[in-house]
Image 1: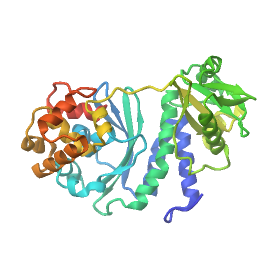
Image 2: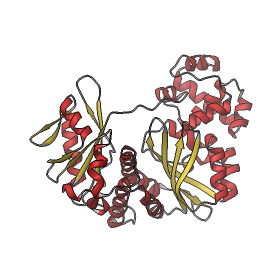
Image 3: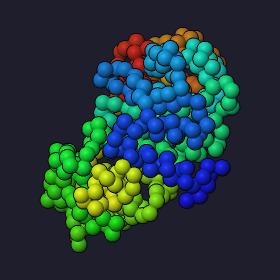
Image 4: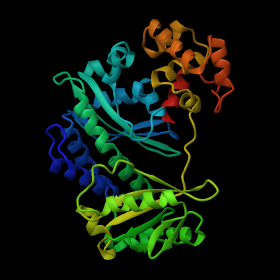
Length: 392
C-alpha cells in the first residue's frame, strides 16, 4: 500500500475494511460514510437510493445536511446534473459538479437547490444499478472550502470499487445483518451462488444455489477442490481476484468490483468478491474458516431509460442527453433552456456537439435518428421524460 497525498496507508486500509464490513451489516454505513467524507475533507455525505418503481429519491445514512436541503434535493433531483449523468456513467465512475463548474453556475439546480444552502460542490459515483433501484454515494462541500481537486477525486476513485462491491453483496444477501449461527441457513436461501474459500483457494463451503451452478457445469466447475471457470481467461482472472481478496490486508489495486464468468454460448454469471479475513466479516464466517466469499449471480439487465442506449452508442454526456430529451418532446431551444435552467447558447452548444457525435446536420434528422433507436422516447411531457431518465 502507498500513501496518497498525505492520506496514510493505514487510514485507507481501515476505511476499505469498514466498507467491506458494511456488506454484512448495512447499519455500519452511517459511520463508514462519515469516514469516507472525512478522508475527502467533506462537510456532508451519504448514500442516495433512487427507487424507479415508486419514483422516489431516498437519502440513507446522510449527515451534515439541513433537512430543508434534502427535501428540496428530492423534489428537484430529476432535473439535477447528477441524475442524467449517472445514466451515461458506468458503475463506479466518479464525477464532481466542479468538473464543469462554468455550466453548473448557469443551472437552475445550482441557483435553487445548492446556493441557498451554501453548497458549492458535490462529488459522487453510481454504486449499484438493478432492475428496480439505483444507488449512489456522495459527499459535498460548503462555501468555506474550495471545490474538489485531483486529490479528492483520486481518493473517491480508489474507494469506489470497494463501495460498489459491498453494496452488490448487500443487495444479493437482501438482509439487514448476518449472525454466524444463522449464516448457513441464510446463505442456502439465496438465489445467488455463494462460495467460501480458504486462504489457499480451496472451497470450504457452497450454498444450495452454488451447488446447482456447479452441477450445471456450463460456466463454473470444481477442479481439485477449487473454483474452475470453463473459460480460460475467466479462470486466470478469478484466481487472481481470490488471491487479492485473501492476502494479508486489503489490496488497494483491487479495483474491479465484478468479474464476468461466461459459458460457451454467451451467457454465464457475474462474480463479486468479499474479503472475510478481518473485521466483523471474520466473526460472521468463523464456522467455515474462510478468507474470501465469492457471490456468483445470473446477470440482471436493468431496463433501459429513454435515450440511454442512444446516449451510450454515440457517447453523449449527461448535459447533452438532458437537452436531447427536452427537444424530443417538441420544445424549442428557448423553452428547453428555461426548463433545464441553462442559457439558450448552452443549449445550442450541446446541440452542435450532438450533431457532431451522431453525424446529423439538423434537428429533424437527429430526432428521427433518436425515434428509430431502441428504446424509443414515449410521448410524456418533457418533465416526465427527464424524471424517468433520472430514475432508470
